[in-house]
Amino acid sequence: MKTSGAGIVPTSWKIPGAGSRLYVDDEEIQREVLRQILERDNHTVEVADGGQAGLEAFHAANLRGEPFDVVISDLGMPYVDGREVARLVKRESPATPVILLTGWGERMRAEGKLPSGVDFVVSKPTSVNQIREALRESKHCCKMAWSVLGSSMM
Image (cartoon, rainbow, N blue to C red; front, side, top):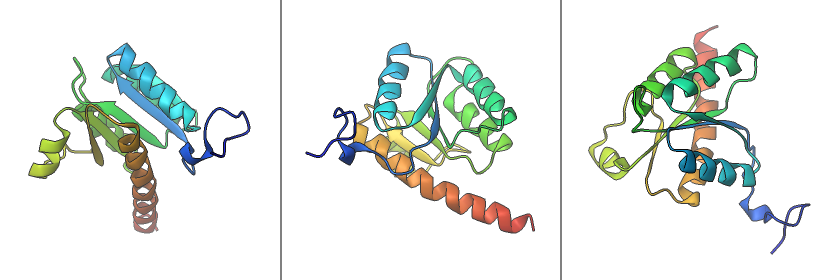
């Protein structure tokens, strides 16, 4: 198997166009595991402890001129849940893809009921391949959204 320069991460695991990701979850173990997976795939990752912290991190990154390419959020969090994170992210940045992680993913897809502002749903327990596929899809989604937004602004 061919490996990257450090000899640790197989190049076949690398995601082309890896970028800046915000992962929002109220469970520390979940944040750490997904952060490690994304970093292994060469993504820059910021994690936030819950919905409110996630929204603050998202807004601060936009103010710095360093917006996140994708927001990944758990659905079930106290106070500010994943639905609210998605809705408010889209209000501030309509072209930013939002991936929702939930134990209800299969049911949501079967019923065709994605929460407002959510572009992709990934079922829990989550596999590495499901996350990678959602990120690949979100890259296409983002390009399409910017194209539509750009043409409507002219």
